[in-house]
Image (cartoon, rainbow, N blue to C red; front, top):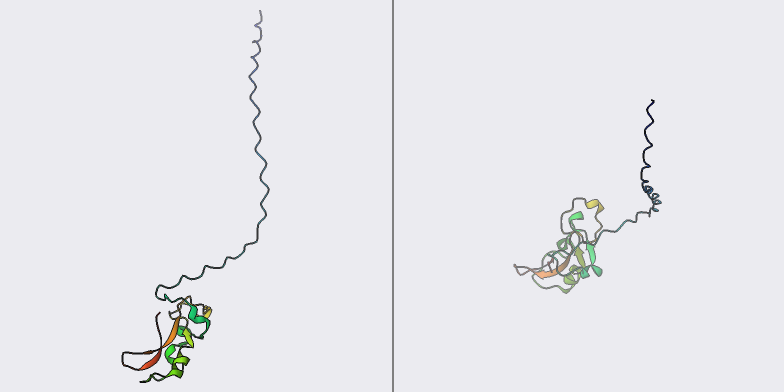
Length: 134
């Protein structure tokens, strides 16, 4: 006798359909890059008086052009207090007071320190125009 074919395999249990992956998200529209201005420089702990004095005084360009209070035209030092010299001296402030790596691009914004010019009496008893820490 001829062997009979093997019985058919039992039907395999059906697997649940595999979910298809979600479609890719549409690309988000790119917003143009808006430059954010840098935060203002923190006030220097050496200059507690703030920068109010810069509003009504003329700029002397300190380390950039070697313009300091003492060479503001109030010279030489005087043994007596001079009201006119005091007014002239105290019409200036110095910016910057610290050395700069790149003085060409400095904005004269007190980020490298500012000091008011003050007509003061020195240890020698003479009055002169100097930058004075607040």
